[in-house]
Image (cartoon, rainbow, N blue to C red; front, side, top):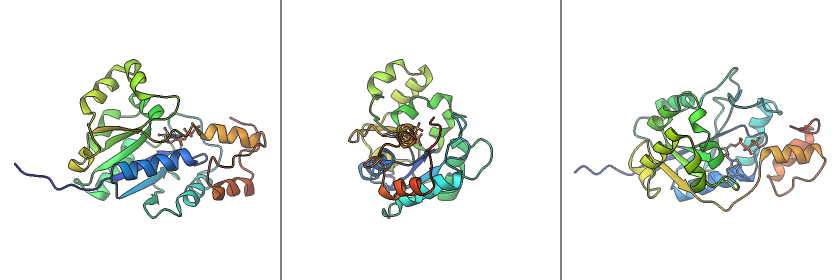
Length: 226
Ligand code: ATP
C-alpha cells in the first residue's frame, strides 16, 4: 500500500467582509489550529451573486480585511475577486487557486454553518468538492446537527457521504472531504455591526479597533441601515 505524504492544507475564507469582524477572524484561527493548516487566505467577494451589493466599496472592504489580518503571519489576503465586475463564483476562484497551488495541495473552503446550509444554491456546487474540502464551523443559532435533517436532500446526502471523522483526513487527500468543527460561539454578524453603527451605538469588542477606526474615519454605515 502506498502511504500518501501528509500535506498541511491551505484554508480559504471568502466573504463580503462588510465589515470583517471577530467571528470571521476566530473562525479562521480555529480552522488553522484544528486542521493544522499552513495558512488561511481571506478572499473578499466582488459582486456577490446571492445577496445585495455591499455597502462599503470593494477597496474599503479589502482595506478592512488587510487591517484586521495584518498582525497574523498565517493570514493572507487575496484580491482576485474583490475588483471583478459582475458575479464571482467560488467554483471559478477555487479553479484558479487549484491551478496556482497544484493538484496535490489540500485546499479547504471554510464556511460558517449558515453558509454551508445554502451551498446547494451556489453555482456548480457539486464541483466545489472536487476542487476542495469543506470545513464547516458551527455558527450560533445555526446548529448543523438539527439543521442537516431539514437541509436540501442532495446537500444532506453529500454531507453524510463525505463527513470525515477527524481533520487529519484533510491532510491525506487534496479535496473531497467535509469536516464539521466547533469554535467558541461568537454571535457576531456584519449586519448587526452596520445596524449598530447607523444607530450610533458602540461596536467595540465586536471587531478589531483598527477596523472600527477605519469605519469611523470613512464614515461607513452611518446612513440608512440594511
Ligand atoms: P452579514 O451579516 O452581512 O450577512 P456575515 O457576518 O455573515 O455578514 P460574511 O462576510 O457573509 O459575514 O461571512 C463570511 C463567512 O464567515 C461565511 O461563511 C459565514 O458563515 C462566516 N461567519 C460570519 N460570521 C461568523 C460568526 N460569527 N461565526 C462563525 N462564522 C461566521
